Image (cartoon, rainbow, N blue to C red; front, side, top):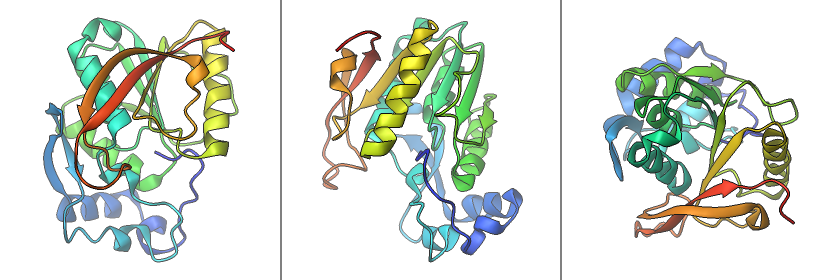
Length: 230
């Protein structure tokens, strides 16, 4: 999920992806995603031992193992409105578990790219894509400072929780819009959301791992990211 996270030099971070995959398969639970029951994901549960996976000195929390509201509502929106992505090339930016890209593939996207720099998330994403019988191509590097890839639509869930990261994401999305790429953002209203650039297109009530921790459903919104708005 985090495009700026530093992967730990401890735990399984230095191990081959096959070892990480084995850990995920043995310690995480496969279950339907809340609000998006069409999709099954490997998810954290009590006793998963994710600290062993990340390593004691890791600066990368296992965000990918939990359900976040922004990605959830984007996935729900794509499945409810498949014409949004059908026949189009999709980029899932900061993909985490892959729920957004998986939903786009299920809704008929021609191709799905997923940009994710956390090695654990990348392994989990591949496992989740296989669980759901879809093809997702991974970009395992930070792409925020580069030119947009050849896609028709970019989907961004839950990347506006940190000031610097939000600034970099916003600049990347502006470059995407400048070359005619549509952008959709899913977010429950995090602190650094670029509200002046956004127009709401849908809203859903969903619990958010990054929220108050009470498990209660709150409104999260799918926005269109508009170009040239000040």
